[in-house]
Length: 166
Image (cartoon, rainbow, N blue to C red; front, side, top):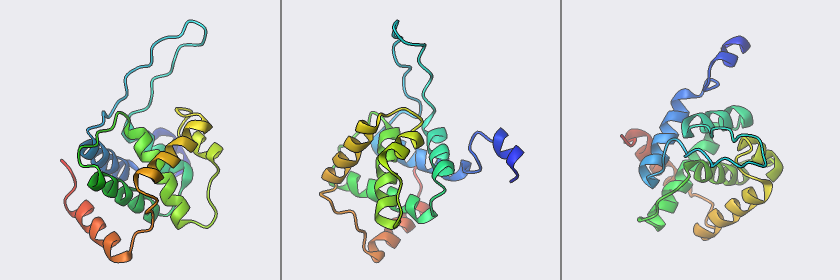
């Protein structure tokens, strides 16, 4: 896909992956695809409409250009989180995705992005301090069990990709 097509593509060439991830997160955690509009604040400029979860994920994949294994591990970590807390529901799939994707990148990649860079990937929806807090909370909920043995990882991939949520 050439540069001019990417500028017109709201999914930056990641539509299929972004839609699959958004369905996975929305299904597992009962998260809305679109966040409610924030209330107006008379002291600041009008709030911008948050991107849909699918567009948020597509932008993160485009902006980071990380290896596909990072996305797979992020989904596997979310699967592990849901297994630990079956009744867990999420008010923001955006938070769940960003924190799991950030952690997966730190597990897999030698050279990782800073929290400030992850705030940029989050399209300004989260301050740097929130990004740090999201990472700490996710690691805590996972009891810092971030490594995934190859056999477990491959099994989760087979289950995730062969039986995607509706």
